[in-house]
Amino acid sequence: MRKDTKSKTKVLFLSYYIYDPSVPGFKPKYEILSSKWEGDIFHLTTENKDLKAGSFTFRGCKSLQTNVIFKQLFYLWFCIRSAMRHGPYDVIISYDPMICGIISIILKTFMKSKLLIEVNTDHFYRVPGDTNNFKSKIVRRIKEWMMRLSFSQADAVKFINSTLASDYRNRFDLPENKIKQDIFFSYIGTQAFTPSSHSEDNTILMVGHPYRIKGVDVLIKAFNRISADYPETTLRIIGMCKNLHYYKSLVAKESKVEFLPGIPHDEIVRYFRSCLFYVLASRTEAMGRVMIEAMACGKPVIGSNVSGVLDVVADGETGFIFESENDWDLSEKMRLLLDAPERRDSMGAAGIDRVEKLFSPEIYATRYFEFMAQIVPSPSN
Image 1: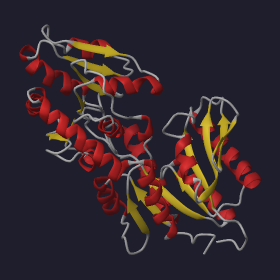
Image 2: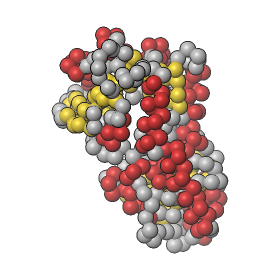
Image 3: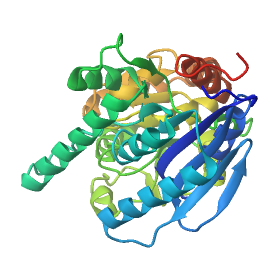
Image 4: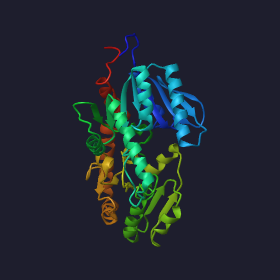
């Protein structure tokens, strides 16, 4: 820690894609962290524009490069120039152990900062059916090399879920007694998601993309199994999809399925509030942010038994867990909620309580402050 009189730890968050830092999931995050930290967020954007968020400043890098390599080199140069202008920093937090991780190592070297690497997704996950050709093998090798280098230079690692932590610790030989580690969720703007007293519109909701990874095909097949028994119920699917015609072709004639394109964040809340319950049939999931948002609105949730979902859903209390890819199992879990309004109410109330205790912005800030205290001492100490 630098010997000065400042009262806050100076932090640089290094990200890659944040096109709109004003939405609830971004700007409020840094406002709440401003109680103990200050600093900057470097990110790629569509325009060169700075934005204040408490004691932090978003510093956008507008890149017109279409070539991937040139774009990354341009971003590296932007980060170096910006760090020299606005630094030094006590700690650098890299959003991932790949491109951002490599850039962070370079910045750490000349600024003598601590480095914390976040692991927010499984970078090795492959969608079932994807080709395993020579190019994809080379890409995976490059990814693994970047991650090994990033972890070797990191002072700490934060994992987004327990399954991912276990897998990466084994893959990259990250003993907990040699590098500081913790497992907790990413910031979620649950303050924007609250229950409503308005009546429900008899819909089952799913929000997200890409459809293949989110298991939309599994969800549609499950709904087809039960739709004849619930003719007044509609499955509402929200999100962008390039091959929507394929998913529409999966819908049975008697099934009422509504497809909506991506909806702005400030408008999506009403869909959470009005649904009967939320379903996420993902084949992989780092955290299941949308499930937490649905729970904050007082809705029970159903999720597949994959990675981050298992850390979010309390099976039998805030919703149900079903076997991934098993559309019959999912359809039976959906029946359990459709047949019992009182169960939906009790699970919805339990979900609100779970969000407040485990996933609120305040809990996120507390967990991160406690973890940071292990890496760099507080300026007030």
